Amino acid sequence: MTVYGGIEAGGSKWECGIGTGPTDLRATETISTTTPTETIGRAVAFFERSGPVDAVGIGCFGPVDLNPSSPTWGHVTTTPKPGWSNTDVASEVSRRLSVPVAFDTDVNAAALGEHRWGAVAGLDTFCYLTIGTGIGGGGMAGGSLLHGLVHPEFGHLRIPHDLRLDPFPGVCPYHGDCWEGLACGPAVEARWGRPAEELVGRADVWELEAEYVALGLVSVIAVLSPQRLVLGGGVGTAPDLLPLVRLRVAALLNHYLDADLLGERIADYIVPPALGPRSGVLGAVALAAATPSPRATRGGGP
Amino acid sequence: MTVYGGIEAGGSKWECGIGTGPTDLRATETISTTTPTETIGRAVAFFERSGPVDAVGIGCFGPVDLNPSSPTWGHVTTTPKPGWSNTDVASEVSRRLSVPVAFDTDVNAAALGEHRWGAVAGLDTFCYLTIGTGIGGGGMAGGSLLHGLVHPEFGHLRIPHDLRLDPFPGVCPYHGDCWEGLACGPAVEARWGRPAEELVGRADVWELEAEYVALGLVSVIAVLSPQRLVLGGGVGTAPDLLPLVRLRVAALLNHYLDADLLGERIADYIVPPALGPRSGVLGAVALAAATPSPRATRGGGP
Image 1 (cartoon, each protein chain N blue to C red):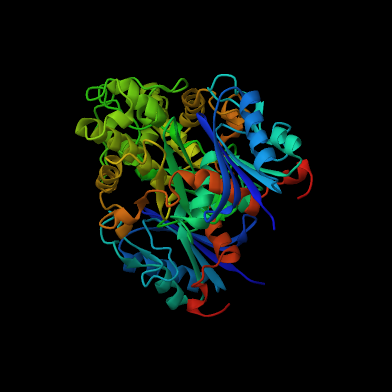
Image 2 (tube, rainbow over the protein chains, first blue to last red):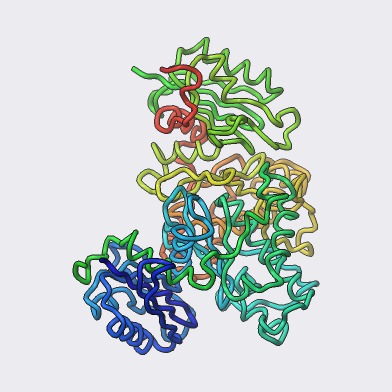
C-alpha cells in the first residue's frame, strides 16, 4: 500500500506526518523552524526513521515559487524570515529521501486537507485562512487550488485603519499596516503588550481584532465569492474571535448580496477547521496523494 | 453556420451584437437601460430584426443569480438600480426569441471576450475590472470563470480611506465608502462637482483616483494572484489614470512578491482592454458560443 509523508512547513514550526488520512496518521513529529539546514535535516531524519514513504507533500510558508518550469521551483523566495530567503525546500527533501515531492503553499495544503476530509468537503470554491504568526490564505476556485502569477498572499491586502481608534502602526516589514501587519499574532502582542493567548476575555482586544479580520474577509468574499470560509491558526481559532467575526462580516456586507449564508446563516459560512491543527499536515499528505506537481517525479518514482 | 447574439446588459446601457467574433460583428445596437420591460423588449426586437441568431449570451449587471438549479437563475437580484430588483432577464430573452441563453455577469463576459480574442489570451488566471457607473470585476482562476457562492463583487471590498485627505463619504447605498463608493464614476462626479470626462489633466483628481484604484487592485492581487489585470470602463480607461495606477500598485506592493510584472514590468501587467469598449458584447457572443449554461437549452435547441 502506498504511504505518504506530509510536511506543514510553517515559519515557526514544521509538522511532519506519515500515513494516508485522518484515521491513519501513523507517526507525527513537530520540529521548530530554525535554520534551513537544521530544519530540513530533522524532517528528513524523521521520514528516514519512521518511514519509508512513497511520496512527500510539502505545504510551505512563503512566498514560494510554484512555477514548475522555474529553476527555483520549490524554493522559499522573498520571505522576511531571517535565513530563509531563496531556500530550496522541495528538491532538497526529494533528493535526500529519493521520493517525489509535491509542493504548494501551507495554506493551499490546509485548504486541500479540509476539502478532502473536513469542513469544505464537496465544495469547489472556498478559502482556508490562517491567522497566527502571519495571515495567509489559500483555497480553490472552480475545483482548482488557487495559484496564478505567484500565489495568493491574503495577508498583504490593505484594510481600513482608523488611526484615531488604533494608533498602532502595524508590524509588516513591507507594508506596515496591511491586514497581516494589523491583525497577525505578533501585531496583537505588540499592540497590547501580551500574547493573544494571555488576552482571553478582553473585549477591547477581540472586538478590534474581529473588526480587522472581518474587513479582510469582506475583501476575500468580494473577490472570490467563496462558498465557505475556514478560519484557522492560533489567533484565528482563539475562543473569543469567531462569533465576533461572523457578526462583523454580516454587518459590513449589509445584505448587499442575496445569500442567507452571508446573513442569518453566517455561522455555517465562517467555520473552524474540522481537522483542527492537523489541516496542514493532513493536507500535505493529500497533496502527495492527489495533486503531485509536474516536478513530482524529480526525486524518483514511488 | 451558427450565429450568436451577445448582450452586454449594463446598468446604464445595453450593447447588443450579432456575429461570431471581433472581425465578424454583423450588426450592433446600443439601448439605454430604462425599465426592464422596455429594455428587454428593445433588445429582443433588435435580434428579431437583425437576426436570426442561434443562441444568445448575456453578460448582465448585478448582483445576479447564476445558480443553474435556482428558480431565479438568470435574474438580477438585489440591485440598487430602481425597478430592476428581482427581474428575470435570461429566461425572458430565451422565451421570446426561442433560443438558448447563456448567462453570466457583465464582467465575466468581458473577461471571457478578452480571453478569447484580447489582452489575456492564453492565460488561465486573470481579472477584468471595470470602473464606470460602478466598479465590477470578473475573470478566471485555473481556467474557469469566477463564480462561487454568488459571484465576485470586487466593487464592494473595503479600502483605506483617509478622511483628513478626502472627507468625501462615498456613494454606495449599502456601504458608503467601499471601493466602488469612493472610486466609481458617480463618486468622482459627486466629489469634484463635474463628471470624470471633464476633469482631464487635473492632477489632484487623478492622483486620488489612482490611489483608490491601486488599493483595490492590491486586494485583488493578494486574493487571486492574477497573471494579468485588464482595466476597463469609462473611468478605468480615462487617459490620466493607468500610468498612475501602475506606479501606485507597484509602490504599495513594495517588492513583497518576487515578480518583475509587479515591479519594473508592471506596464505589461495592468493593461487596457484589447477589444476596447467591445469586450463585453464580444464576450457575450463568446459566452453563447463557448460556455452555454446548464440551462442554455431552456429556450429550445439551436
